[in-house]
Length: 325
Image (tube, rainbow, N blue to C red; front, side, top):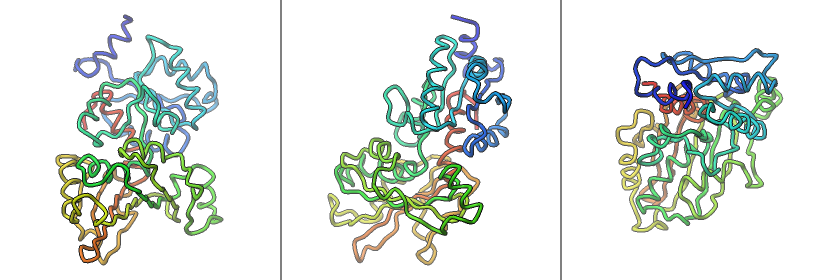
């Protein structure tokens, strides 16, 4: 075993070890820039950059990967697959990976980077060599659905519909440019062929056997997100009350520093502001609705660049490298 491999293995146990280093492959994009900004405030980490003119130079990138303890991939899916092949070529010198693309969200051999999703998930991330960062929309939907399915309140084959709205920063360069140039509509639905690339991870990690209907939308605001799931309570096993659903969520996330179940009063006047958690890594969950009509709306609120992307990546990086909050 090389001395470099030894030092990596000792990072979390040897207080005197060198500072762990992180290389962001694709740091010039929206998520990469946001991860770098957030990592700049994390003590005990070295964040390494490649010269702008060498960002597409495979040899230069490989050299950066060789010297890093962890590589964050902020790349299009195909480029992410190619980057993983570069990492694998290093064999025993290979760094650990957090992939922010969708390329490995449901791939074998990758750990899903949502620490609060289930018991033991944070430890699995801490020990993992490869972590796939969750999508922003699935983060909210999984957080709402998984505890209810695990508790038997929602059948795994229930015909779930997920509706969501995000700030335009989650839509990639062309969407960002269109909104910032004032040429995009104020609001639009998209993914109406029902083939959105986030559906496979949403279905798998929520624990759904039936493919959910997912309808995303984008509004004319930079960041912020609401994810909602409507339910008819009388169609659920045991005909649960709103408080039963809220109780299952509260039990799952008790003690969490970032995920919080909030009371119905958060929707003052029956309204929720999508931008309320901007610039935070928090995720708020609420059970709203009417006992009179036996209808519920589960709602998740988050910053699509925070807990929905860069904030989640930094949380996973901290776990993997043993860097305390």
